[in-house]
Image (cartoon, rainbow over all chains, first blue to last red; front, side, top):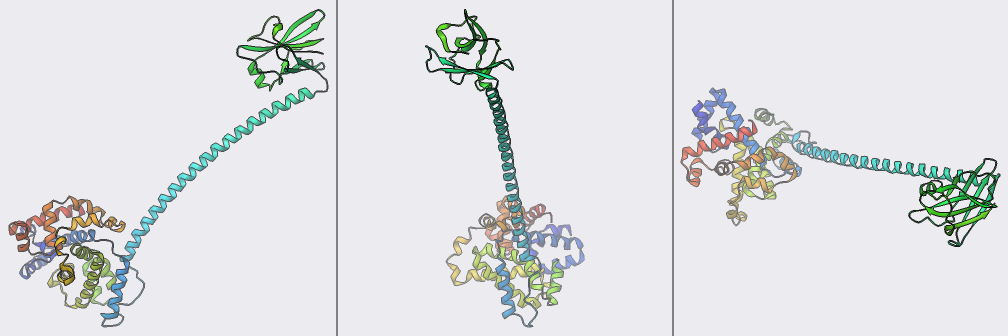
Length: 265
Length: 176
């Protein structure tokens, strides 16, 4: 029996290329041996699959065409084939596949869109953070300005304008002396930016005799931080102010050639 | 559904029998027909012809004639060969012989077909050239052992056992 199976006759039987005698032989063997029967089914399955796999796409239209043809011309008993909506799996098999593909595509698109949206949300979040930081910075600036404005507007202030001197005739500055709070501020918005390696130094002056006392060296950081309105040391009874350009760190006494502004209280 | 259940439906003239029949075998028959004709529209025509023949002659089929699949396979091959012999086709006959079913796998990569064939496809392409030739002749073209033996210049017995080995390879992959 083993030999019979291995001879290859069963394959040819399925292929339909055996003689009638051979067919009889196979059928007799199949009737007697379950193994032969099972082998036949397996071979047939493989062959059905093989031919199925080489089939190009078969349009559902073909099904409907053949069905119609059978009903119109070849149905001896009307009603043997009834025209009714198709329920079983042939075309719906394709539709199933198509649906699966569409679903896959759909999932793909969903995922893609989800990714895209996630990206958008992330960049929107980033943008929002940026704006929040900007707002915070602006608020901070605004507070500083408000603070400075309050200082300048204080009714107890005595404003002392300092006029530009020889080295810088167009320069100007203003001192605000608040005797109530015992605070002095300098507004240097009218001074050119100090060159590299130099800083402005503010002097309180007593006039008779002319005695300069340093009340502050204005570093670049201070100027930037305070928007050009910087608190300097208080000096009771000050009579005049002068601002000179000095080497970084300031000098013990003012360099008169570098006197930028000067003004009497 | 098994072939036996299908046949029961057909004999009972069940109204869904045609649909079941079509579902089970249309693609396989179309594959065989297309492999010979290499033309989709013409193959659809022949497929229609085949189903009409099956339907008209179903009462003449009985199991003593062989497997039902074999019976309809023979109808499909014979109808196709008739078509090939017809006037319109003679001019194309020569260049058809070059192709075999493996080429068809390469040339009909529609999406749906690709999915259907995807498992078997890669394997079929790996079949030994001898296997491709033997299966092409015996199964797809319905050559007799003798004809195949002549065509392949291979002893008669060898054709049969070689074919079995090839189908065994196929079954291993398909797990049937």
